[in-house]
Image (cartoon, rainbow, N blue to C red; front, side):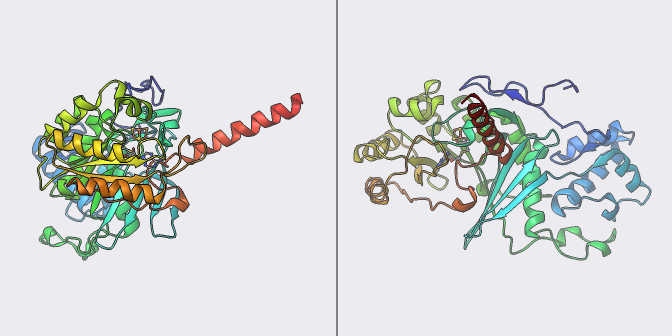
Length: 417
Ligand code: SAH
Ligand code: SF4
């Protein structure tokens, strides 16, 4: 990685991964951002800055705790770190958060944040509160290269992978916003005190889904590293059972996802024939249905207790017939999959080429799958009024630039006419 590495790149093609992953965003002030780093990475940075190995190891353990368990961003608040050490750290490091461009709250309580990277690219995150859980929907990329025909994110022109810091940063920001860091006597914590006693209870944020912008398996390394930090018991400590990664079907990465991350898997199936899936999920032309379902059958860790979720967006007269429902059951059973189906009413966006199936049709489809022995609830769309629902995420700056382009085109037209 060097400073010349391009930070954003044009879409290389419908079904190719973004070729140049970036690790850490370089900062203009020369300090390194510790956000998203694992304990060993923090230790390595401390050692490179001059601490001996033993010191680096000890300090990295303390820093990890303060950063991810307590949510602290100011080195001066780290009371178990020797006083002279704190300014030394602050000269060399920062503990960053994504910049918030805009925060919105829906009438149903769903919240959406528009965030900006250091190099000025926008991405979004959504929090969905329910009676028994709070789900944070996070992004793995700015935009998405895959261009699924029904997805707003897929129409963004520029795409880049988010760094581990930008991915973990979303979770940190949500915790900040929800006021969920362990309360306790932060300012009075001294060296003898048992820090483990400070645990958050009554958490609002209980689950994470990688269902925001981007294809997480096209940014595998960063997503894996970020999730490891999020799951680490000394930090945010979210269980892998409460994290779900959604993929449109990047078959070659699915086994590694199970082995190296170990989270729940959701697969955006959306169609049961080659013809329809090729049209609406272009990645299907590269990895077909059979290959995809076989990779699901082989997914490490899947069992009847931990089923794979098959997402199915309901598109009027496209994939919503009785035959489609029956074929869905046949396929899932044929591969012996521990499966549940999640029916997603299509969320419209300006310019979309599809319509949502009628409620009666969705109900009928759901009934057929249920009768086939597979659970198939219909997902309630959340946050529609603030464009926070599934597949609607697209940064405001992109929307604005589009609007601006339209305005310019109109002006040109007027000038010509
Ligand atoms: N790229 C990953 C994860 C992000 S998309 C994937 O495709 O799985 C999260 C989910 O929203 C996917 O199931 C996606 O197909 C669905 N989705 C996209 N656009 C949608 C829309 N307009 N209405 C409803 N669901 C949509
Ligand atoms: Fe990308 Fe998922 Fe949208 Fe397809 S549905 S374009 S894979 S974000």
